[in-house]
Length: 356
Image (tube, helix red, strand yellow):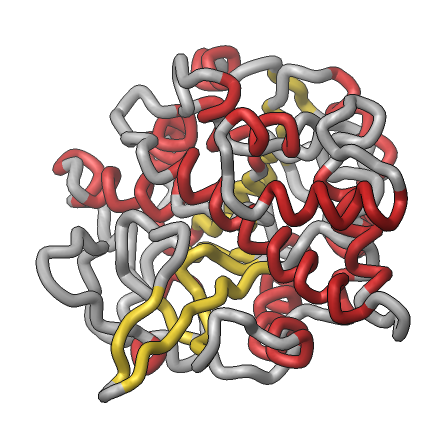
C-alpha cells in the first residue's frame, strides 16, 4: 500500500495551538500586517520601497498578499532603472519570509495529539510500512521533521522500523556530505547512518535548514537566484532568523534555499531540486493512496497543480484520494485539478482519524 501524504501550511497551522495571530505561521493574506505587528526589521525597508515606487502600503487589506508583493518586487529586479533597490527589497522580503516562518514555527512542540503525528500514526497502525509512506510538501518549516522524530522516539511506532532518517529523508544526493556542524550545545536532529531510508520527505520549495554561504550579508542577485549554487544542510532543531558563522578567519553569512512564492517557479528551482520533483511525481503516479492535509493547491502554483494533473491522469489512479481541510473550496479545487471520479473530504483531522 503506497501512501503519499501531501502536506501544506494548514498542517503547521493546525498545531500552532492558541498562539496569537502575529505569532501564527504566515499565510499569504495578512502576511505584512503580522510583520508590522511583530516589528520585523526587514518590513520597514520593503514598505518604503513599495510606497516610493508604487504608492502601495502592504499592510492595507487590498494589498496585503505575500505572493502579490513578492511578484511585484521580483519583476523589478530586471528593470535597469530600479534594479539595485529592487534587489535589496527582494533580498529583504526573502529574509522577512524566512524570519516569519522561523519565529512562528520554531516554538511549536510536537505531541502525540499533533495532527500530522496522528495521521502518520493511523497509517502505521493500519499496517503500512514506513518505507511505503512518503511525504510531499511545499512548506519550508521543520514541522514534518519534528513530527517524524517524535514518532521515532515513540516506542510503539519505532519498533515498526526506521521512521526518521536525517538527512537521508530528503532524498537529496550526497545529503550527508552537505551537513554542517553546529557548535556548542545547539539542539539538533539525530543524524542517522548513510543509506538509512525511513519515510521520505520531498520538500519541493526548499527548506529553512538548507542554506548557501556567502562572504557578505548583501547577497547579490546572481547568488540568490543561482540554480547551481552549493548548499548545505543544518541539523539544528530551531533555525536562527539570521544564521552566520566563522569559516577560518572570516565570517560567513547563510542565505536560505527556499523557492519564493512567485509565478513560474520552475525558472528558479535549484538544479538539485529537479530530481526531487521528478521522483515526487513518480511517487504520486504509483500511489495507492493520496492524503492531502492542509494544502489548498493555489491557482498560482502552476507547477504543483500540473504535477497533480499529470499524476492522476496517468491511467493508474489511486484507490483513495483524501482531502483534509476546513474549506470545501479546497475540496472543489482537487475535484477540478485531479479529474478523479471519487474523492473523500474531511473538514478536520479528528473526522479523518475517526474514520474506520
